[in-house]
Length: 91
Image 1 (cartoon, helix red, strand yellow):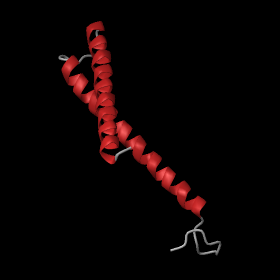
Image 2 (tube, helix red, strand yellow):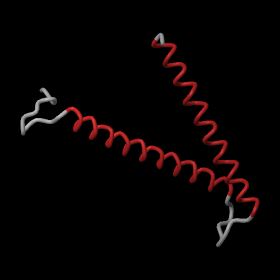
Image 3 (cartoon, helix red, strand yellow):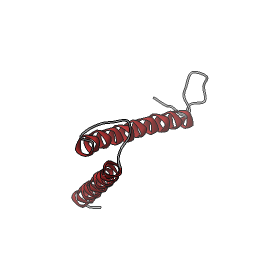
Image 4 (spheres, helix red, strand yellow):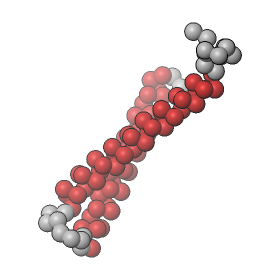
């Protein structure tokens, strides 16, 4: 199928590429939100033993440190996986 045709019934490459980028952006946003929710849930369970109307300073520090460590670990794993995939692909 030729997406570059200029006929009234066809799609232009720019239109298809634009739609694909929009879909990819939506997927990336959803994945980022899921990661944030997962980190929030795990760290909340770890740091907040007695939920109340506000967080005390210990809970705030614990949450900040926990989420920082979580995202640092995720970045390290992602970089390691990327490096491994590149070396296996011969790049």
